[in-house]
Image (cartoon, rainbow, N blue to C red; front, top):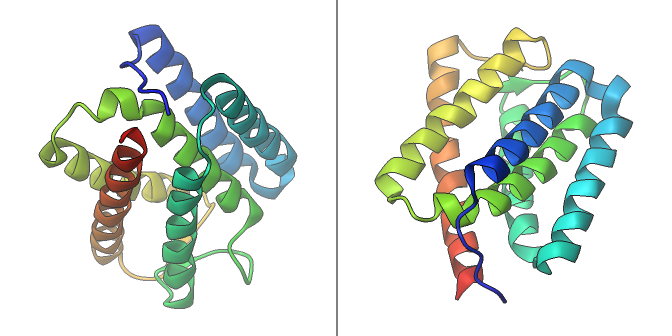
Length: 170
């Protein structure tokens, strides 16, 4: 495995814009734009695998963990989707998020957990809130309890990402 160097600001910008475009395609387009989202996911994973010979297992661990958390959130009524199971677009979004986290790791991995975990927790929860405002998901609980649940879960997601992506470097 090769150790990658931190990304230049232009690479950070391009990757972040790509991920944000995928987020908007998923959340705004939902099922109608799912083919475009899945095309973005495939392009992202193929290029990353080809360019960096990136192991897919760390990303799949993050995706699986995220899908388990969202499935539990749906079963417990924290998140309410228009489908019985997690929507197709959310699965694609988790794949794109895990890819993005792996891409950003050479830069983000330089920061302390005291910086990464709280920012990830707040950012993850706010992402769901934005999705709720755009009618992609409903909150089954009042706003503050839902955000607190999501923030605590995103602390776990970020801790897992740090652990898994740090391990791949060894």
